[in-house]
Amino acid sequence: MTKETQNSIGQIPSEAYTSISASLAKGERRIQEGIRVKAEIDNKRAGFANFMFDSIREQIIKFQKKLSSEEEIGVILANFGTDTIISVENIGYQNPHFIIICGCTEDDKPVQLLQHVSQVNILLQPVPVKQGQQPRKIGFSV
Image (cartoon, rainbow, N blue to C red; front, side, top):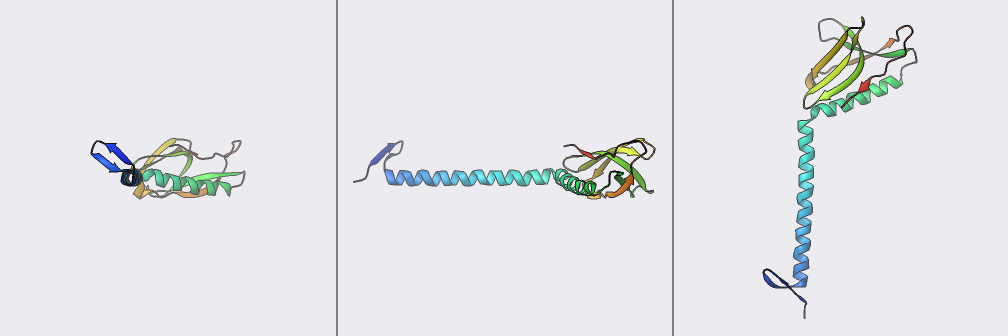
C-alpha cells in the first residue's frame, strides 16, 4: 500500500506527488536557463560597442607589448581627408554603437573622437616618445 499525501486537490500517491514536483522543478530550471540565455542575447544586441571595445583593447595591449622603451602608440586616423596622428590617452565606449577615443594631436591640442562601430578603423603605429617624457600607455574606461 502506498503512502498518501493530502493537498488542496485531494489524495495523491506520494510517488506521483514526487514525480510531479520533480517535473515542475525541471521545468522551472529550463525556464530560468531560457531567461538567462535571452538576457545574454539581448545584452549582445543592445551593447555591440562593448564587444568591439574589448577587441580593440586586446589588440592595443598586444601591440604595446612589442614596443621598445623609446616608443609609444600613435594612432593614425586617415578617414578625415588628411593623416592625423593622435597620441591616444583613453579609449572607451557608449553602448550600443559608439567607440570614444580621447587624446591629443601632435601639437598637443586635445581631441575626442566619437566613432560609430561600423566606421572604426584604427591604425596603430609606433612613434618616438617626446624628448624628456615617459612613454604613454593607452587607458581604457568602461
